[in-house]
Image (cartoon, rainbow, N blue to C red):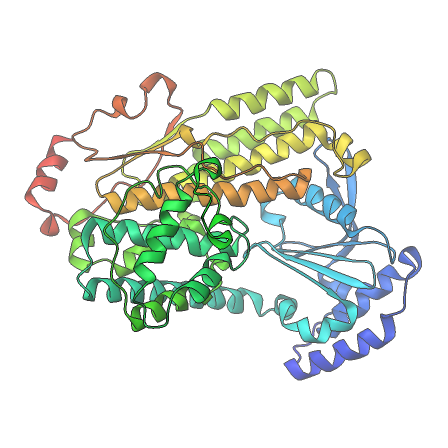
Length: 508
């Protein structure tokens, strides 16, 4: 029986749990009692919701057993005190990949009695703390009390709103100063990249904000100069940088990829504008998905301009509803069929299947900020990760991330093509694809112990700026190499169409 408890009662129970279990060490003897007691902290009868030793098909077609599994909510792996939680992590995520989509949990929890390690898969966050610190971290387990469905969505919505307000405030401050048009749009894209980069491991943590705090004066008068220099540095390879460059500037990576190539007339800052920029840098951008960058920029655009140009941003749920039956479900079914077949030539078949994934090319002729391309790329990388794990899982199990095998992700950004009529959404689409690549590289590293380098950027999604109704699509991607056309055509009611757009619709 599950009882809804007040937060203070849960916190008090967590203190009692710590006192009872802080010295335990025997996995086989006490692990089940440990987790029964853990669930009881939240007023949950464990057997009502979760099962010990849940059988799951591993990616090598063998079966494994999840230590404790709550369908759609929580996967638990447990080790004896002092045993490696890294090995538990590897096992947990292998089991996760083998679960049916509808059963996959939003949280993975590891423990060795002494330490908890929680993965929030929705927000891509990892938390690790000693058992003694459980009461201080008890809010991380709100989902145990049924609060997650509402609380997490509300929290994500709040964070998205905060991000939009911060970006909007910076846009307004710049626009009010007379800075506008193409240069404003490119400047904001660059700032967004820097904000996201320092919170997600592309830059060293807090590199950008510390540069602003330590090298720009409070009245904002030299912010323009320092940002201009920073943009120039990030477009310069290390071996071509001035020997007189400060150590702090030289710590910024060479980005490449044309993101910082164009020389802009920079905005002149005052104290208030510098403060707005710092507010944005203080925000934790790691909680924001690149898939909503377009919506963030849309929120600061003029409403009439959005309506005239038919800008439309489709939710992830609706994107998956399109791409799963179009191609994704069939690809997963083909992969599982290889897994469930005999061992004869299985590794060769998996390698051939990966090559086929690598060859796929996608085209969104009205891509906006790239939402369809972003989600499609992410889902293909996840499928490829499962394929690689199936090919090399036996070596992972025996070497445990101390690998002497060469494993590389091969899904190419340049196989994702789009057309967008405006420049700023096209630039956002490119940046969002790079940042999604970075996120997927980190998922790859979790399985294979090595993160592919993102920087300097070497490839990019192929986003063409132009009117999709007037361009020859073969000039964007050759028909004979294209696998799927995806996307959501821009739609506005006939009463709101510009004459040129209406005529273009008739031409279709």
